[in-house]
Each structure stands twice: as structure tokens, then as C-alpha cells.
Image (cartoon, rainbow, N blue to C red; front, top):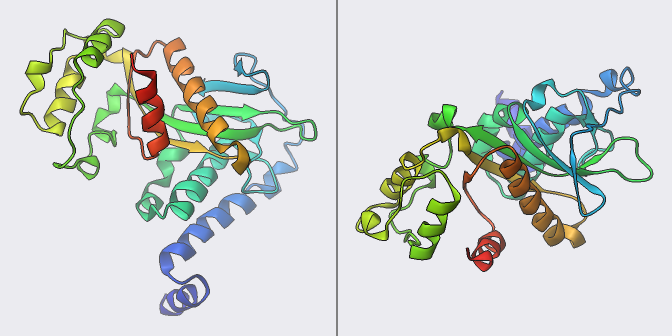
Length: 260
């Protein structure tokens, strides 16, 4: 192990970068022996919706049981849906943003309900994934990152816009909300009050790990399509309120510009 660590530092600069590359390597090369037996699997989901003519989006109840293969920009070969999403998560969150904490939680991205946005190209029988996001229901709220202490900060100032609270109450099955009930409360207390104000918990969920991939020149366009597709997919599935963690300032500005 000492020699492995020394070699990792020599080649990659640190052990975490080496682990990241190793996890990507395993995913890219693992399915090659299986792929040759599945070349005839070109299943298309007839229930997927189409957005902007050539982009498909859908909610997959459990990606670990989905037998379809997808292309990603990080592998020359198509991968099973579950592996493709894990690979994209590693490449974007861990390798690009250096969120090495996720190395210990890769299994979260390999199963469960996910939103996917993908497109078919003329030269490939397998579609290419453009975006994905993990959807968690209230039944496993204890696992939600939204309420994790890691994503809390006492210096954050809540945006308690009265019109926003009113529209939130009207658009969802929530108890009436008033700005006065949140005054002098911490962000954690406000978030918990909002959650417990939801009358029908089946209409709420958490959406995290939203990834955007594909051509860099189309990054903003793909981000717009992903947010639009995700919102429509969740609404169509009966979700009225979504808890999420946004890292990109452009996404925050996008939602602010939509106002009510």
C-alpha cells in the first residue's frame, strides 16, 4: 500500500486524484465483455417525452434495473444507464469540481429514481446522456443532503419574499405561510418549518446531483433544457415542491428571473 501511494502521488499528484481516475477506469472497462452480448439492445422508452424536437426526458424509477445503454462524453463505448450516470457524476463533480467526499458515496448515483435528458444522433444507435439528477422521496428524508449539516451556514440570509411564500402556498398542498412565522429563525429552522408545512408529503421530493454534459458551446442551453425538463417531469409525476441544492450562480439567477 505504501508503494501504491507513492506511485499515485508521483503520477497523479495525490491519492485522491488517483482514486478518481481509477473509479472512472473501472466503469469504462468493466462492461466491455458484456457489451458484445448486448449489441442488439437498442430499447427505446416509448413513455419518454420530447423537448425541443430532439431531446428526450424521463424519470426512471430505478436506474439499477434499467437495461438500456447510453453514450457519454467520457467514454468511447456505450455504458449501462447506471454506470453512465456514475461516470458522469465522477467526471463532473469529483474530477472537475474536486468534491472528493463523493468518492465514498458513489453507490447513491448507481440506483434509485433519476431524471435523465438524452438525445439520439444520426451516427449512433445508442442515445447520449445530456443531463441527470437523483430524485429522493420523503420516505428517506433522513438521507437528504438538503437537510445535512454540511450544507448549512449560519451566515446565509434567508430570502423570505412575501409574494414567494404566498405563491408557494397556493401552488402546493401546504399550510398557509406567513413571513412573520419565520422571523428570527435560523435557516435550518425555516427549512424544517417549510417541510413540515407540506400536507401531502408524497408531493415533495429532493432533486440533487444535477449534471450537465455534452458540447461546451451548448452548456447554457443544455442547462436550460435540463431545468425545464426536470421541472416538467416532476410536475407530471405529481410533485409540487422540490428541495434542491444549487451550486451554479447562473441557476440561482435563472430561478430568480422567473419570479412567481
